Image 1: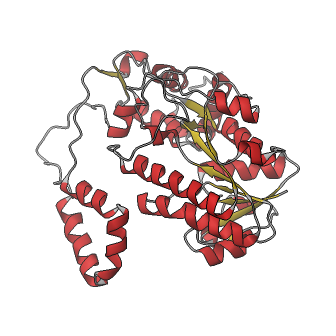
Image 2: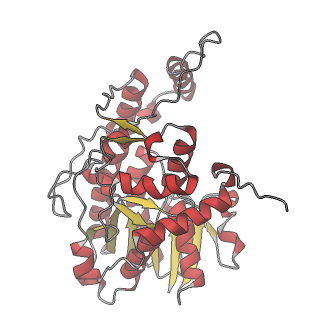
Length: 372
């Protein structure tokens, strides 16, 4: 099969291109918006194409001749919401019927309520715009799939880690800078999925012999093991030779009130606001953006203040994630797709750290060798 991959320059898309090209009978067809995004995919002699994930005409042309498409493109909340309908319309015009869409377990929130599975009703009352956008995107995806009679799989992975992952580089950088932290004893559930396990799930969706029986559904996918945030940080800290006691323990998490700029951005991301925006003059919108940027710029540091000791950097996303007490199930993926994660968490972390030592040797302690 010819598999089109939208967003093939991203973390998941790059790894999927590698797998399909090097270890499958399929032909990978990377689709990116601009030539500069082909730095990694174009190292292989493969048929790459240019298209905008928000332009149905260019996307339909790029999908021509392919048998299936994987959508792994990123974007802001508005783009995330709009892309599925464009994708389905373009796929239908190109004669494709099978779509694998990369959604996220974040449709259930970062602090996923116990008992959650694919049948749990979704809502758009999350505090993070990304979550609400992913919910709207899934709804648009399934509605468009029914309208165009397509076989659509929406995969909902949790924390996707591996070589090139921000979860690995961010954790290592935080440990090296002395700002890494855990909530309490770090027993919150991390809900990891190693990148090759996610690629395995994607291939199962692409290769299933009876898509009519398995498609037009959402699938939670995760590693087999229950991994805590302490479990996630421990091997990274050992590799960097950072003592466990250097990780800050945070018992009381801060509140995250929305700033004026965040409230404006949240309002503008809503569908009704996006419909109104084209009516406003371009110059007015540009001047408004400049004013908002000025209001949200933090004051410069005081040169006379003695720098304080490193303190943990706590984001709202991370605070919610570390409070999670529910291991997301993948029973549906196992039952309908025969999904069994082929890579253990320990092996996935070992591969990730091996890559990190190559990509970011500055994070690792220098080895002093004696000269005899």
